[in-house]
Image 1 (cartoon, helix red, strand yellow):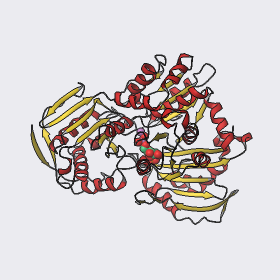
Image 2 (image 1 turned 60 degrees about the horizontal axis):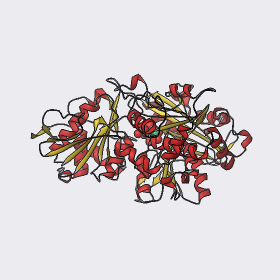
Image 3 (image 1 turned 120 degrees about the vertical axis):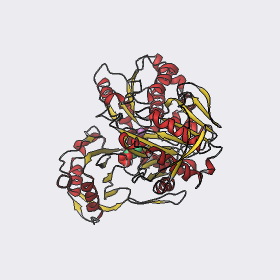
Image 4 (image 1 turned 180 degrees about the horizontal axis):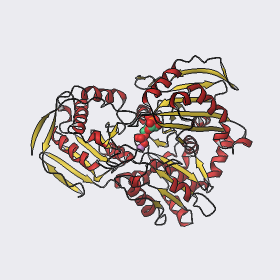
Length: 546
Ligand code: VG1
Ligand code: CO
């Protein structure tokens, strides 16, 4: 196998967003497009000549979507061309995002490349994505993604080995020139880690005693993980896992675990005969939605409840060091942190901002309102981990999901919360809307019944490494702590998506049962008027409400 240097020219727009570079498959499959980006990664992490990657080990895998295998073959050949000693690749090219993080850490590798566009649809006309995770296991921090982008804009060549494709379905070692390619079982290390954190005997006993759940893998990457852990190791009945076979187009759906897209699961959890517990995960396995019978748990509440009950789980029995949440996530977890006497951290959106806090031992649990929950066991959010933590809590408390959450609200008050997404709006209109909001001076003004305490564009100084991130979302915070937040999505591939986050604290337990859309109606209207959503985007209603 001989190393070939291929001459290339830069593509504009190879700028990683909230979580890696995401584009349509048609964009990624242009000649040199993927290769340019991968070479930019190797150059940025390995110095100008890529010399520092020589002799290192790289983990590679993805969520199994269309183009996964093609991309992996190219990446392996480029790793060989750039002098890596070894590539570890999940069998079939499969590796969930949290499992990739687990393996990167466990084998002390030089990081990994994850192929995923997460919850975005897959298929020849849909989305693809790629991101680099650092040796600590987490998404590359902004300094690294900026260096990758800068490099992609001046790239003139890339290195690749010319060789036949590797057999990604055969476990064990193959050689590509001097480099070893190790195809490994993508589930085993991850499942072992889960078994070390949670009370598997208690969960097994619950299933034996008739506890029932449904897990919707949405034809995405968690199918094999969920079957192995829930059905094989924990003894849940066969068929507990729905849509468990990963498909290149996710069966035509959005592998996004929310009330709109995970409708099979929502239906299964509705009505008298429904199981006790339901959960779903997304394309790459880092998100989770949790349901009880006829009961939806918001991701912000989920983090708060898990934090309050963490010591029931063997891996967290010694207590938590701190709780971190993204800025738009509700303050429910902060209330738990206050009670536990531990710090609560507020970071910008995107898991990459939790890495330093986790590495420094300042936080144990982290979460985002976007169905992301995780801990210091890996450096990504972790869908099945959250499901297992819930199972552990349910098995130990022997109460229903609804009873546990309602009791939590009673103790702490309820942070009533909702997110309204306006998807596929015109990008210029979206930028104009954000500029308009940025220009408002609202301090001291009244909006309806609410007095504005302050408004700003959230900026964050990392408490560990001092790095500063600006323009992370417009906040309008009211005197009583209620707030509305506006952000543009950084994960889409077409037009723009406006996210509006609405939150109000309700101490009165007589009002905790109210539908958040009702309880938040005033604030929802204030947000729409303030941002001039209808006038600027032509939309009268959001496309997705969570
Ligand atoms: C969204 C979520 C954010 C999450 C990101 C990646 O980003 O809001 O909380 O970290 O997706 O999740 P944005 O920029 O579209 O709002 V995943 O499961 O796509 O890696
Ligand atoms: Co995801």
